[in-house]
Image (tube, rainbow, N blue to C red; front, side, top):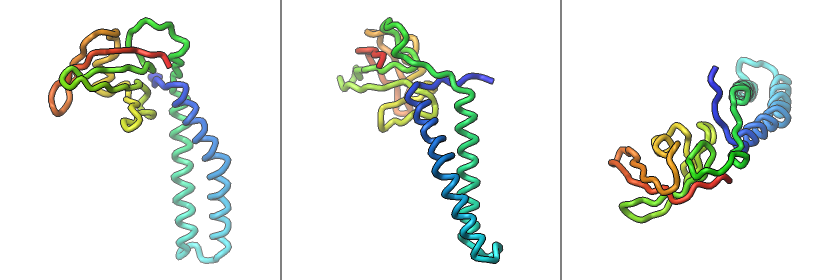
Length: 158
């Protein structure tokens, strides 16, 4: 099975969510099921069915997180020597050559991606265009609205 790249921050967030699900949500849901059982007839007990549905969701999410963590290749970009080359985990400052606007992206794993926080997936078109390029290079990103040219201003290992 292929290892999925993940940043240290992404791994920590998944481990924290797993901990919360196991130590907070599981006991809360179990207590809700027990309380609903005390109310009698389970066939027509909406509280019981809702709690069982929550339990199913939580257990599914626990299995999903455990699977992701077992297949994760955690990459700490701060431990990699700085070469000015764009690699997984780096933070890249780009200059749009058409508008002179500056944008900063961090290349992260699939689960960590959040465009609103400028965290882009390693599989995204922008990241694929940037990987392997160096500071000063011009890259063309194929976007639905047309090609966009960016100059790589700075690559940071933070």
